[in-house]
Length: 391
Ligand code: NDP
Ligand code: MG
Image (cartoon, rainbow, N blue to C red; front, top):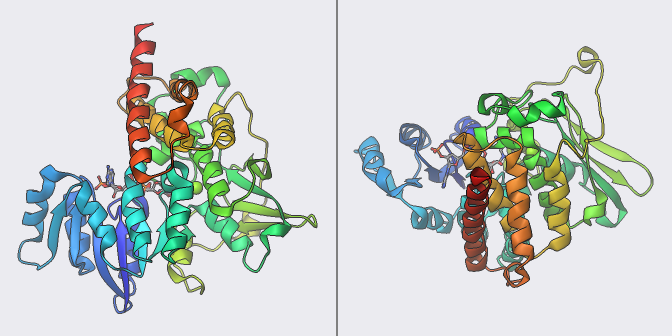
């Protein structure tokens, strides 16, 4: 039996992972499932998969979780420390699908146990790429990509030498507003931004797709995961979301990965790697599809992309700053306290303020320093938003 844990089991990626694991009950021994506010779903899946332990991120929900698991013999736990402890429980394969920087510490802990970490949580590499890669190396652990673009790139690279890679082309659907006139974006509403044209995902990543912050995070994730130079990473708008990304080689060949927009492909690939197994995803009918479209992203529409390249140039802890400021600005947009275009302005302001304090960004990349930087960036994002509101 393979021991597996799912962090963020109650979310969009988590539920797709639960679906795949539940299809093979005699193959997997489920160790830990973690969730947040959705106690009923967490308890239901813990029972369904016979997990050893279920953990909610929120201390004040522990009694509810205990009550939901009463009489099952499944342990219940709550809080940040318990999430990290979940990472310390030996498992062969761990899905990292908590949303946001909160996914970093539990994932790092799993790597320290030598687990294979299937990484949906892109924030892990954006905030602490070098630390995560070093930790994996030291503990002989493995990282496998789950983000569809990175899974596509990873698959296109099988059997290839990184020295023959010329460029990596990441596709982007362009999100909810790709065809909107630029002047209308200022008034884009929360409901409009929460509706992705092709993918069914959590609300936060869906809004990040509309603003292109998701692609910005993915560009940084690509640099960390594959060790390429930022100048080798391109982004192209591809409205159909059928080509998940491409690798360009020095002989001019382009290897593209195509498939239906269903995250169970990338999750299943990471679950069964290095083998390929049957997966319950739709097969593409290319004749019916007829055509695929591509176009360059307009700089004016997607300031988040420019910021991502600035962050990669800057290095150090600027990825943690970028992500934390983005998370805080996104919180405010979801609370309808700032507008859609304000998000990028807030993130840029916070990056500039850190730039004026280089000692902070150049601090050593330890989990403590990343966490402190993340907290400060959130505070400065709040200050930037208060300033804007006062104008
Ligand atoms: P969801 O919002 O659907 O799910 C997030 C999960 O994390 C839920 O289990 C949620 O619990 C839990 N959670 C929320 N806040 C916290 C916290 N502070 N501490 C611990 N756990 C928390 O997100 P997605 O599944 O869409 O995304 C998960 C990750 O995967 C993100 O990093 C995203 O960028 C990445 N990703 C997602 C894709 C997708 O198709 N959805 C595609 C590629 C990458 P609860 O719901 O119970 O509150
Ligand atoms: Mg993606």
